[in-house]
Length: 131
Image: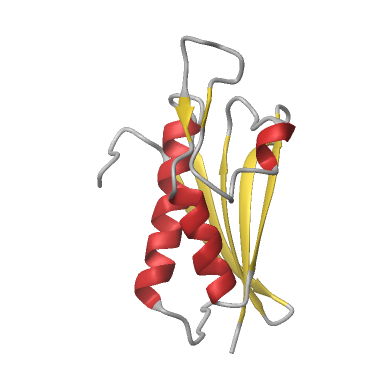
């Protein structure tokens, strides 16, 4: 509802239940979806997927746009920083949100992965063990 002009699609095939901190997972999901909206190509859809595989809940967020540079991928979960992707007219603030996401994921004994290419877009995938 906060972004009525953004096409957000949600695909889920499973009814996933686990013992997690619901408010922290909501914060994690909100941060990832909001980042996809803010850093994606204007007008492009954001795709959210939730399913389970091999005893894990998998949550992913995908958007199209300028890929996250390789040098930033190593830093993106560690601290607050800005990046302009070498375009001084566009500064992107990655802030503390992704650091918080990483801490929430690791606090649930999970893992987070990032892939970002021009062809495939940017995908953050969270894997949490189902207890």
